[in-house]
Every structure is written in structure tokens, then in C-alpha cells.
Image (cartoon, rainbow, N blue to C red; front, side):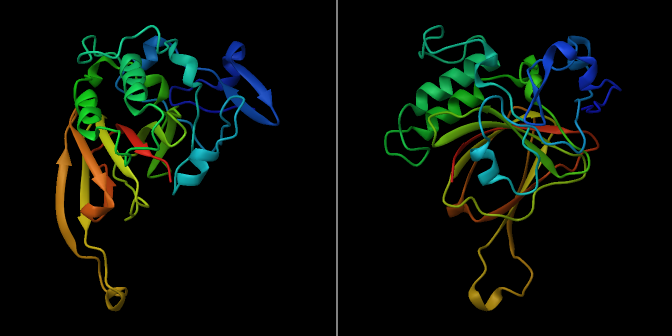
Amino acid sequence: MSVTLSAGLSVSDLTDRNKEEDGHAVLTPPLVPESLLSSSQIPYIQEVEHQYHHKQPSIIDSIAIMAIGIFTKPSALGVSHSTIPNVGPCQQNRFDELVVRLKDALGPSSGLTSDDVDVDFLQQLMEGYDGSDNMWKPYAFGDRSRGYTRNLVDEGNGKSNLLVLVWSPGKGSPIHDHGNAHCLMKILKGNLTETRYAFPNEDEEQKPMKIIGERTYKENSVAYMADELGLHRVSNRGSDFAVSLHCRQSP
């Protein structure tokens, strides 16, 4: 099985990191050289589906709208709860620290809507991380033929998860709700525009959707999304890939 990368590499060239399980390629990050990851071009994989290593991707399948899920090991970051204390702001501004801090903050709760979860604190953690360190790049795989891709970083507590989304230039998501889920989105690269729409009444279903607001989020900014704010669409109006980090409740 050969998968084409943006720089002309193929997964078959990386034989020490490519295995076959049930006919699917199982990829262990990092997939590309550091020299490629440090460039402005984000590697992308075309027309291929991947399985999460040793686990069926039930969470991603359940929330996918129009994207390919490309999965990596939650343990690939090489950190654990015992190695990083859950105190103070993200002093080192490292992606692996942020992942553990968010997971610790969510704890055994049922998701972002739980009474014991402080959404403001989660937002503060995400705001405290500086995406310019590029530690998220091993999770950033895009596909120009699609609006965006979802890439699993951590399954969290089973009710919430952490995803890196890569948005193709000039494309975006369809208008959608969040199924009563709550979501925090941090911009890691580029800008993303959120357009909000009013929920249509039954007699307005055939009418054009009414726009109630629009905002462009720049690099390192954090947005909160929930159904109570309306339906919405997220789009990348730039000429290059944009990347965002999402902490959301699973449906």
C-alpha cells in the first residue's frame, strides 16, 4: 500500500513505521522528516482511510461529516499524568503538556456540559498554549479534495476528545449544529471564519438561512461553540491550509 505525501514521499518509503493490519495502513508518528514538518507546507494524504492503531475508530466515525479520520496513538506524545503536574498555567507552552492538562481538567466527568467541568478553565488552558511551537504538526494531515480532516489526538475520558482539524484553502464545513455538544476551538495556524445562523422555524425550512453573526479567528485565538449560540459554519478563506485544535464533547 502506497500513500502519497505532499513532498513526494510515500508511506512505503518509511518501512520501519509502516505495518499492515487487516488490509489497512497503520502509521506511527512522526511520519515525515523534521525538515518537512518545520516547513510552511503541511503534509497531506490523499484518498486513503486509516485505522486507529489497535482500536476501532468509533468516536471519529460517529462525528464525521465530510472528513477523513487519520488517527495516531494517544500515547505517542510520551507523557502521562504522573509526569506533568496540573498546577498553574502552561508555563512551557508545549502541546504535550496541554493535552495532559486538558485531560486532567476533564477528569472522569461526562463531558464539557458536566457541572464539575470548568469550561472557562479549559479555555484558559487553550489560550495559554502558543501554537507557534509546532508541536502539533505530527497530527496535522489534510486533504485538498475535502473541506477538512479530523485527526484524533486523545480520546479523553470517553465522553470528550481532543482533535486537530486541518482546513483546506477556500473550503469549509457545511452548516451544522453540535448535537447539544459544547466545543472549544483554538487556531493553531492561519485564520478561520465562523458564520452563525439562526435555527429555522418549521415554516422557514425552504428559505435561505438567516445569518446572525460572523467572526474571523486569528492564530492562537480560542472560540467557544454551542447550539445555544445558533447553527454555524467554519471556513478557511485563506490560500493555505489552516489548522485548529478542538476540545469537544462526544455525541
